[in-house]
Length: 331
Length: 159
Image 1 (spheres, chains in turn yellow, cyan):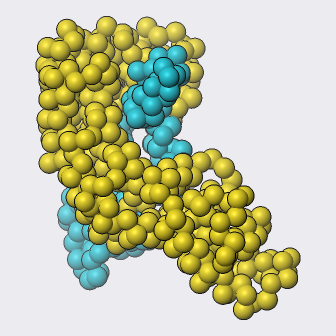
Image 2 (cartoon, chains in turn purple, yellow; image 1 turned 180 degrees about the vertical axis):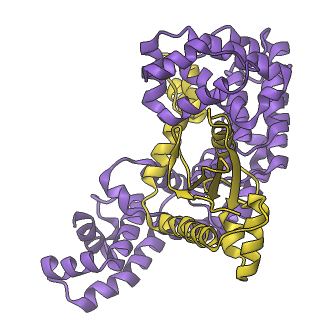
Image 3 (cartoon, chains in turn cyan, red; image 1 turned 180 degrees about the horizontal axis):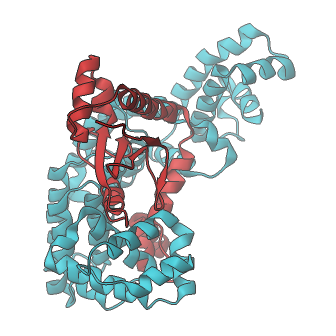
């Protein structure tokens, strides 16, 4: 009930109280709104806090005011960061932040900053933070917000660095939005940055992330180009595949790539089949303990079993994966 | 024409499936939001992997997918019936399976709706876990997870 007390305390002219940061108020107010919708919380609120029903109901309007106040007084960057952090938080209180509530809140933030977002007056970081939240709660009724983010993305495209571009595509994938044109533009831009050698950033990882995002959406052409294009080789001497084969990446990443190749059926392509073979072989050679720790800490056991099933059923098209199967059995 | 046994909610290999028709060795999956992109038609790669994995099970079952959006979107019962016949590739369809599939497809839709009221944290944890890699010792590994954060962290360290 503490958060409700905070919401209550923070109403009206006490909105600037030191113990409550402006951005936190937005989330708190949304939590308060949720609580008002719950009969159980509502009842408790009346009993334990000695508020009368009218007061509690009037909180709803005040909460709206508080939110609006916060939006006016707080910088969009703070809001975006706080909001994004909070939705990812494992804090027990964040369980009150449902998809629907997050949507309401995001729409409020969006409406308030729409002009700023669309005219490209927010940094790539802010745009990505807000777009990531949008991606998690994507819904049919959020078309306006989506259009704004895309317009904003277009306006600020040139100031996006490789990592921002990859993060934007990651959000598209999270929202299940297969916008091939955006992926192609991002790929071309990344290629341009590699060719310019704009900075010594680990571009290869950005390409891998693009590969993963495009692949999850079933955009075969982009994912193929992201992994096979020779721009990385020209700039850094080794192609992405050669880096993967040379064991530059951990078992977790290698498994991720393998999973992506097999899930979309990219192994029909000879180059991908070869890559899948060497990935299976290298995973075969993993220490069983490492394999178990690195994969099962972060992956569902089903994914491992599915990969094993696909390998076993591929009639040697990928490889026999005998050791891999054994490793899966250990699990 | 004999009876066709329909097993619902069984597990084949390690995959939990909606319906299994043992005589035909056929699997029927009711697919909803988790299986399709936002257009409700093109499949996500995770779903393709599940399909591929089922087809590769030792039993080598035939796989049929019912798109719950399409199915529940049909108002006329006859349209639903025809859609099922076409999807399952059979000429006759018992009313039991039509009813069962209807119940299941509605359940998938309802789960999607309930999901809206669920906290988003679990989904996020799942999603991030799916991308997570082996650990902090190699910076590159984390970049796959979230390049922006890792690079920021590196820049902070340098400072």
